Length: 206
Ligand code: IMP
Ligand code: MG
Image (cartoon, rainbow, N blue to C red):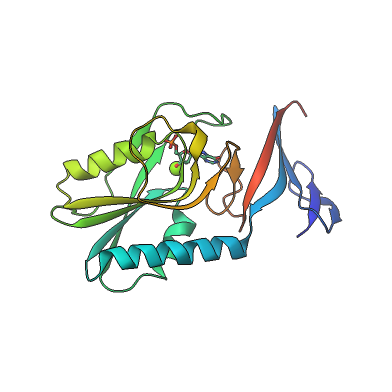
């Protein structure tokens, strides 16, 4: 774990070793990665647990695993490696954040890459359940395409922000109401490549 400060071009200016801190300036904001909320080991154990629950529930059932782009890419890849038997994979896209905002805006769904789900059992996989609006809309849209069943799985859930009735069938970790990045999750398009889930501090002015 290192502490490094980057300049505007991403060059490392200083490096320390006991806490993690990275910074990026995207005017008018400065983004600072403050700490690791979930380590690689914790994520891996959480995904083992999720995969076991899915396997126990499905038995011999064929599944269509549908990932929600872009935040679920790492989770989909890690989960798939832990599931056996017949699995088809498809992706849908959903976005509810715009640019530098950290509160949800208008929800856009794109289902053009969804495979045929009629009469099939779907496992919908997303990075995080925040207000729950994305998952609710997607479950409804996939049922509207004729799915026999739709179960939902998320890596993270912010329990204090739910605005909907539905709850995901499988949850990796409950987290407080903080903005997180890494392991697929972004802020303004960046940080998806961090291998851990990290807290990001976004402050105005730099
Ligand atoms: P919901 O519709 O409010 O549940 O929003 C879910 C979507 O918002 C997720 O798929 C994420 O793309 C995004 N999101 C919510 N919270 C965070 C966060 O803390 N970091 C990064 N993305 C987030
Ligand atoms: Mg998302």
